[in-house]
Length: 449
Image 1 (cartoon, one colour):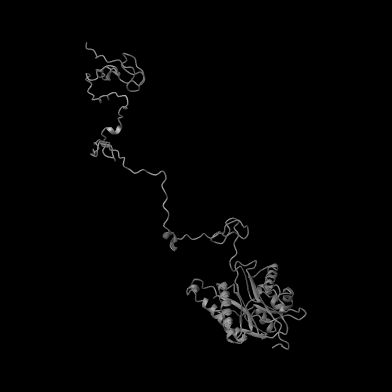
Image 2 (image 1 turned 120 degrees about the vertical axis):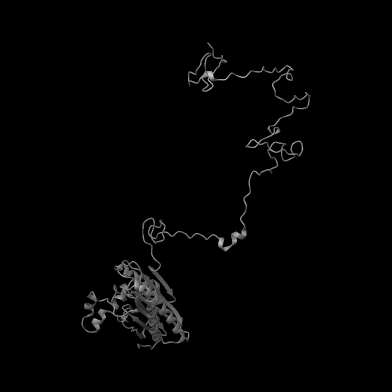
């Protein structure tokens, strides 16, 4: 019977490296067939370190000859770059013919370059081009400071005008306005019930051709039942003020100038009905923009008033022992009832229809009928020009005289603030606008016109 050729003893499994004993045919750990392990090649004897038989050994390896011993010369150092290199595909790298070391830039046949410039430890940052930084289109716009809530003083205000912290709606520019021009001042406030301020005013001063000073005040109240009442009041007050400031220096009589100013205001409001042309198509159920107007001019001892609607002018003398007076008549249902003798003033203004106006500025007004009147007061005092947001809380001349501060002529802005505060304390059901115009003491001998 033939026998399997004897295999050299193995000390460990060639598959899992577990120790095996002589004569094992399979690995006890992984079951590897130890009989298929090929016989090891014929071993060569180990070279002796003291003999000189290196040249007689037939191992086929061409080892470099040992350097001759010398007392002062160190043995040569063999570097990995002394051997020819290959690329990733096994192709020998090209040789260089630049000296024994392939030149200064590369070891001969090494494939490793040594001619790269020394890299600095830190790379300097390139400075920006000042020409680019200084160009207007590249200049960074400064960030606007964040608007803080007027209520909590902590939250930021979003683009819709509400505090991101407490949700409080922030006041609009027209919610509270104050202005002073020389001796005349005005204050306007949104009030406590309305969501916006639909009142507007203009105050100004100029001179007559003879150098006499003239001051003026225009107050307008937007009609809430119409569309864009805030735009109407703003346009009317601006147009009337501009008209007066242009006419008075030319020598136009103040009463004539007031009439022309009201006509100019009416034209400005009428123009709003055409801007844009399709506005009425989108809201055909709404009326055209509309407002009321009232104004006063003090110049050369003359007091001129003009109005359309139910805003009013009051005369309050500095001497509170003298009677105050209301200088305008309302264009309202109540006033018509009283003028016709159908109702007393108390009964008419107690009716729910009392404040229905019968005259206003606007494209759908029945007919423009500016009212003007001139007076020559015989003493100093103040002229109070206001909307019904104030006179609802001080309706009669006597009531108005009681709430006007005694030093109103000297402190018109303070007095206007006090009057607005009176309306707000009373409930602030409407927008409140008031202008205070001081009337200086006339020359001796002047009387009423």
